[in-house]
Image (cartoon, rainbow, N blue to C red):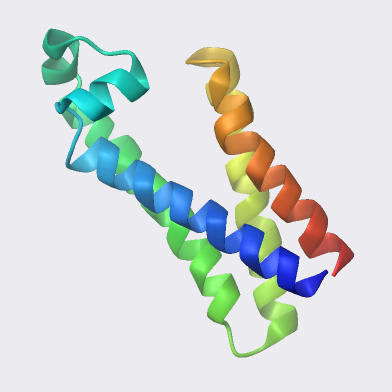
Amino acid sequence: MAVIALVLVGLVAFEHLYILVLEMFLWTTPRAMKSFGMTKENAQITKGLAANQGLYNGFLAAGLVWGLVHPDASIGRSIEIFFLVCVLVAAVFGGFTAKKSILLVQGLPALAALVFVLLS
């Protein structure tokens, strides 16, 4: 259980690092525009907002990595739980306000990781 939890938390952290890169640095590229359903014009207009969102995704990833590497496993577990719940809240909010697929793409992996962290 603990190994699966570790892998899933790592995957959620990696996913949010990837989102950081897309939103902060690649927002106006074809890959990011396709991922977020943006036109070139809208991507240019929202570039600053996307960079801000990317920074927040980076904070989520940093928190999850912090939990993974914390020298005290019980504190690390608490940190992981906190940040996984943050990811879930963000996924639910994004799913209802921005794009329903966020619930699956971000929420489902975070939920799976949270379940395994709680069971480990």
